[in-house]
Length: 440
View 1: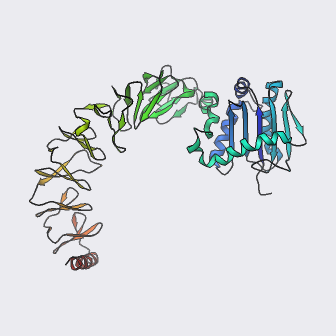
View 2: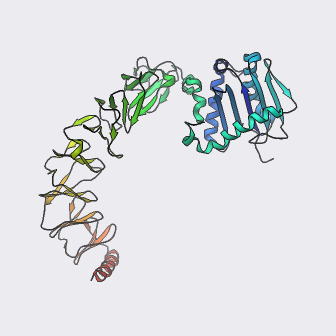
View 3: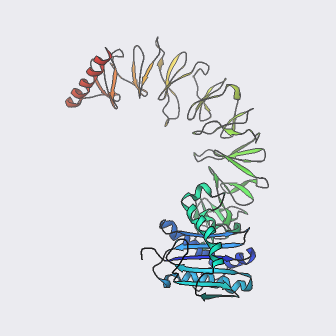
């Protein structure tokens, strides 16, 4: 048969008993929650093998489906899980476990067990009532699995198996003082506490009162558990109120907190939470209709006159800013963006490389408007490739051909360098001649 062996279960069980079941020991000395987490790890490595384990608290129903096996013997570890649940729950758990080669249930099961009366008892087949309940719920969940991220708030989030009833990250249960596990790049846990700054517990700083089971990144370098926000090894705010993530900022009440991944230190300020927004997707400029910030460092500018020119570059009435830092020497009122990193104010031509740290003055403006073509810029007397002026280039006849090549009446250029390969020179010159003729 082409279909792998599948295990499907639908069991009505009270939430309190379900919570106790997650803590129960298994014959291999793991707890149930650890076994479920291991199944999820395996499924993540083999996405074609469906796995879900969902507890629906409103219906008090546990749904389980695993498509990973060849024969009935492969289902023994999962049957042990449900045998444990039946034994723990007594008369309070009722449902069915079915093993067969199907994704949705049907005829020809290789084994069916009824959960009830404190045991897992084998029966001939699923009752019609069981299938009537099992099919709509389980089939709908399986059908939505490929779109789980988009629908997670509405119905199903796969990794909920790691957070049943807000229990937290199951992998934390595997950490020990002799085998700490990492959160991200800077935090570790020994299963009881969270530590910052080192891979060794002896030299790491303990994050006081942080709950490892609910510890996770919120935005930038800000983390949280169920009660607080944290930056490095210290708490920075309580979570008595709901929080909202805006770019790299975390808004709690009427304060916004930022600690971005570029190494800027933690900063916070009072904001209007209803109007607070990120002004540009590619940088950390924020505003709330009355004030402007970069990374929660307030700028002396009004929202009415503040303008984002390109990623990281902005200007206000008082200055031009690169990632919130004033760019000295630039006249904000007359600055014009020419494109591809070139700018001009009333006195200077400027270049800004997105990977650089400052604006570079290329020279005083010549009469007429500069012309930008890709990474080259020229005015009436000069030609530049990015910030590099091309010595002896003729602006009147200069023409980009095909990146990284350009030519004028006398020279062929590769970026800012004169080309020396005769074959390349001949090919570029021919292309330049065709472009010049077409222009005429």
